[in-house]
Amino acid sequence: MRVPHPLRRPAAALAAATAAFCLLLLALVQPPAHALPPGDVPAVGADTGRFKLPIGCTITLGGLPVFYLPTDVDVQGVAPVQLGPGQRFYLSQGSGSITFPSWLTSLAPILGIDKADARVTDLSIGASDSTPSVINIAKDEPFEIKDIAIKAGQALKVGLPLDGTFDVGPYTAPSSGKVTLAFDHAVAEIDLKSSLGFSIPIKADCTPSAGNALLTIAVGGAPGQPPAKITGVPLNFPEPASNELVGIVDAPYACKVGADTLDVGIAVGAHIPLIAKKGAAFSFTQASGALVIPAATVDRLIAAGHTTAAGRVTALNLAVEGGTPAAQNVIPAGGIAIPSTPLVRGRQIVVPLPADGTLTAGPFTPAPGAASVAVSLGDAAASLTFDGGPAVAASCATPSPRVYLVDNPVT
Image (cartoon, rainbow, N blue to C red; front, side, top):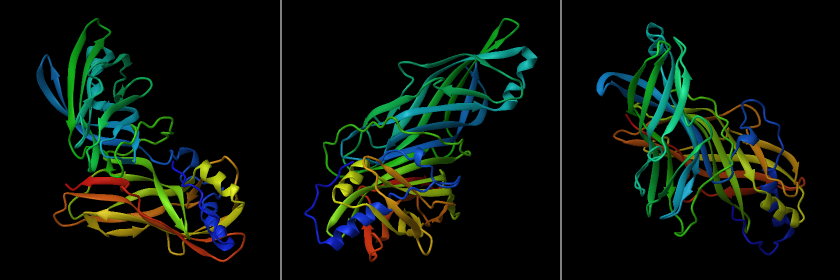
């Protein structure tokens, strides 16, 4: 993350206020179950998530369509939260699975079927307005899985891949606007193997049956930025419900305290629906946040002679496009208190907000005629004290380009 060059030290009171803002973010609070776990928060600038998308698979036998199978594809990975014009980027640390329902395997004992081989020849991820617009990561090297155990009456899950992860890219971003990564298509060839010595080859050709968007990334800022491929971040997400994502976005913020500007991260995690219904509201559930201070910023403040701070976060606004309300402050009335906290040299510190419980985000209602509802991170604010001194206001402007939490089609 960029750390501003040190400014000429202002008067003592302003220096104290500047340090207070960052120090308040460094509160070491041991989070309970509902807080955002600090160890799961990705690096500033990363968007991590797991998505469960409804799909429909046409099942063919001997080249003839036999039946249509509704199911889900489960995909997870990490992408940048912002892109520069023409920047190359990836969806990295990818993995997933397609699950075939239990009623399908309940037919297996009739023919003595107890194992299956699977070969995924198409797993295509699209990136709107980008080049290329879609990439089939299985085109040159299909995913192959041998001897999958089939148990009658239990769902059959085909992993993508069986071990490890995949990267999708590089894509090249457009010169402006936004990019939506989406599940596009999958094809699995499956041999159902019988203990009687024969096999039945079937093919599943799968396409989205509802919203297929994984995440949306705004494009802006200076051209010529280096390729964005994020690795080594935690992906410890529970399995979402169908048509839901669970993820954490860690957005970069430039925060103003007096004459100084300090770089921090603000993370938001939640379970979020992937589509919006006309005239129906939706909300984020199990929502929580965190403030992140990189080690370089911590060291800068220590070098300025600062040690402890306390304060209260008063605002973190969400901006809504194509729906109402137009903005919503997810910090409860009265704010969230941060206790007095020491700086520790060389250590990035993540402060869960709140330390206990969850945040309320929503309900959001699509506007009449809107094709989509997009929710992004807006501005933030805090009231700070340093070593018991007077409270000082601090403000963090809306990230530019925007950082989207979700961009839902209205159906």
